[in-house]
Image 1 (tube, rainbow, N blue to C red):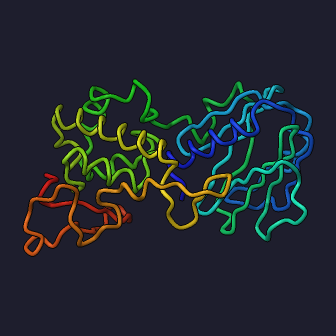
Image 2 (cartoon, helix red, strand yellow):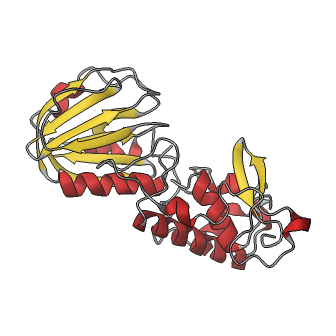
Length: 279
C-alpha cells in the first residue's frame, strides 16, 4: 500500500503535471471500490476547475472551484497515471478516467481497495475519514510535547501506537520500523514507558525518515510506482525493513550470536528491528 511518502510523491506529480485546470470529462467505469463511488460524482465535478492539491494522511484531496473536494485513496494496489491525452486503449483495471485541459488522470486498481468520493469543501474537516485523526507527522503540532502527553496512558507497543491514526496520521508500516530504528527504541516498548527524551528522538526520527523517503520518491515495494511509471528508490536506504538476518547499518554486534535484524509481528504487522541497538 502506498504510504505517506508515496502519496505525497503522487500528489506532487499531479500538481506539477496537471495543475490548476478545468475538468472537461469524467468516466467512471466501476463504481464499486472499497466504498461505492457516489453515482452523481461525474455530474458534480465535470466542468469544475481544480484549484488546489493537498495530501491528508494517505489521502489526496483535489479542491474544486465549486465547493467540492475530491477525496482519493490508493488502497492496496491503486495507481494514478498521467498522460497528455486520452489513451487509445484502456487497461483491464482502469476504473476512473478524468480528462482535463492539461492532461488525463487514469486510476487503475486491480484489487479495488481504493476510495474515490467527494464532499463539500466547507465540510472537509468534519468528514468521517478525517475528523478523529491525529496531527500530520510533518506539521509543527506533532512534537515531543504532544507525543509525551498522548502516550502517557497508552500501554500498547510503541510500534502499534504510531500506526494508530488517532495518534498521528500517515505513518505506515515501513516508516514506523525505520523511524524506531533511527530513534533506538524497541518496537516492543510499551508506549507509556517512553521518556521525554525518547519522545523527542522518535518525533525527530519520524520526520527525518519521511522527508528522506519523499525526497527519494517513496519506496518501490510490490505495486507502487510513480504516476510517470518510474520507481521510487527509498527502499535502497532502508535500515531494517525486510532485512531479516542481515546486519543493521554500522553494526558492531556479533551477528553469529544476535542473528542480525529480527522480524516479529506486532498488531498483525511485520516488524523489523535490531535487538542490540533498539532498547
